Image (tube, rainbow, N blue to C red):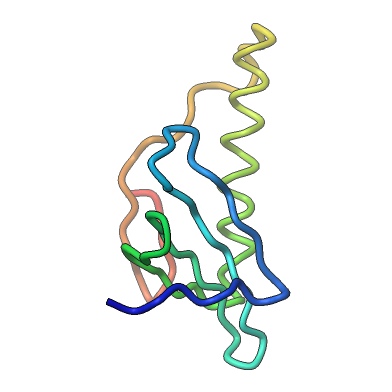
Length: 98
């Protein structure tokens, strides 16, 4: 098994509230034009995903839309409407609701 590497300076760790050493690491790799999202259990990487830097705005938009819907729902605001939960399909390298 590979030993854990320190998180690069341009990165963050998000600890899973379920415990058991679970965490999400986000690390920017500007030299490669990538953001790496990795799932950790203690000092062992259980899986990773390499997201091209150009796709980060789409991820941020999706997270923002979910957060906005959660806040609107908590405030009793129906204007946000239901979240789009349709599965995504990939066309020409871009995900689309399908």
